[in-house]
Image (tube, rainbow, N blue to C red; front, side, top):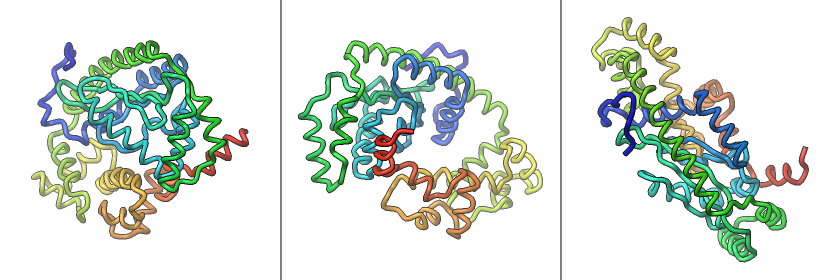
Length: 321
């Protein structure tokens, strides 16, 4: 448990999962974190990411210094599933202290917990490196496993990328984890200050409204319904909601649903139409239009970026610009 905060946080039960995600998003976009991420990447040559607790994306995918080998195999959903298994292991074991896991290739990835009082709100994650020189045996085992999964890969291309993977000695790697742990402590203090400011600034009626919307986002919500649920007039609620969130009620609900949709798009077995109805949209056309408005791209394009196709990655590595 981390201590010595400038202010003690509110009761942990009052901090919802959505609040935790919002906190992590706020910290990740802050100048202090952006400066640290940039310095870390330049000093170590490794990728780093700050992610919420409940996130099933590949947090290092697309980051500066991402291992080209990892980027290449992330293009296949089945190999991506293997990477997500490592994320699951990290989530299970890094709740109170740093934990390092290795993928089937022996690549180390470490998650350092970021805590607000007794509550875990996210992880600092880095890695995608070897702690010993790459070997033929590991690569052969990987190819055999991919063959069993019926995954077609450019073996020669991947072999070149694997044997070019950065190698960090165990001692140096432990020192880097130590740096992350110190920064995680600092992030915890910053998170605490952000949380206090947010809760002091946001009217209780808005907090209750957000919880109500979160719990019923799949329903056909109306402004009047939510205003009634928090015991205020529609006119007054509309006014204070816009002032507190910077969004109209409709836009806010849409954004809540789109964030849910982004997580569901990670599942390749779900059709876009299924996801649209799952998150509360009654029309696929409306869902596509709102998704593009909020994210700047269509749901299909967003999914394609998450699971970049192997052919595209290989083409970029074969024909560098």
